[in-house]
Image 1 (cartoon, rainbow, N blue to C red):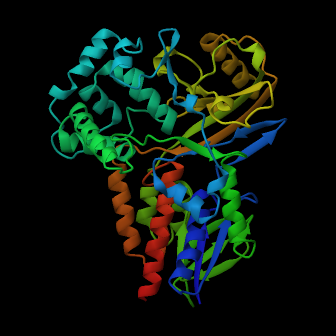
Image 2 (image 1 turned 90 degrees about the vertical axis):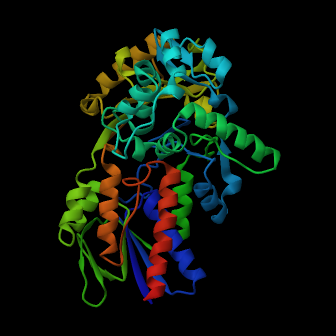
Image 3 (image 1 turned 180 degrees about the vertical axis):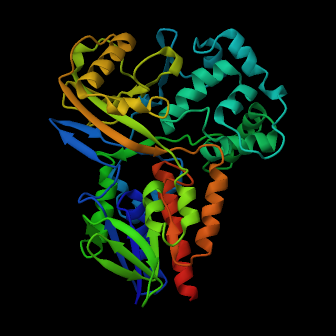
Length: 469
């Protein structure tokens, strides 16, 4: 029987361990899988906390259904009937600028009427088809791309808030090709984003007429999807399917080295285990320490992946105490507006079962790459700053009846310029170390769909290696 060890009990590790077991069974391969997690609780940053009738997401609150990876996993787990789609009103998203919430336009007429971008800014955007495409394949920051193709105002009011909302990142350092590879591909292929949209819209219309299912041309699109009891339901189901015989919790993987009886040895604080293959589904900084002894060059590369801080603040209110319309997803805030928060999600408007009857749940984000020091603020300071922003933006003067604050000192990996080169070097390194695999959100996508896709890819490559020996 072959032996596999997966380090890390977040969604990446859980999905990889599950897929290793199922794919091995499909191949008729006897494979003993052990998952090792430092914490007693499994799920990593996926954690749905239920208190006083509120459901607060400690980390991500769902996934987009426009990509198949997580939907396929849910189907395989028999969990499709448990999925919960977000409210249709959640398609309404806002940017706070100029002292008011401006709805993100969803089409041309809405864009022309919108006050989000000034007329000079709109005219600059209209020039996009005439901007020459970038020469060469040198990596480019999101800020440089935004200024070059769309203009400074679009960068400040559209791109920068989006980057902070998705990555908690700084567009001045983030890589276009690593963060939004599809956008880079569109410029490469069509020379203009506007021309790409026009051509792809025509193609999409033809495919729809032919009965084909198609996704958005430029971005992920889709409907935000979760579970009635929160996104943790997915990691709970995976944990249950793996079973207690597969999982070792409360043990931290400290080191991976060459084995004696088997190719690899994994050392924790109290036990050593040998294995035919090892999958490290741990954050980049933890993976660096684990492989330092066997792959120092790779460890050095992994330490170049920075992480942004994040403070998540959940406020509960009596609905009647809030006069502002909550018909939407929430809003993001450009940095130059001088607010304390990056934005606020109207969680109880997005999904049902997030607040008690007659109550609402708002979830605000603070910190990120642009304000890393905010993670060290006291609870009182965090509460007062969030209250100040909500009063200014939404006119909420009533004190919240429910407050929960969650701090992430290393929340989201930052795909800075040169990230794709670093990932390529890591892949080259693992190719020279058969049986050692790296997976997770540190490499090719931070979202839940990305993690599940990486788990699929890793499990497939690992099983292929074992069956070819």
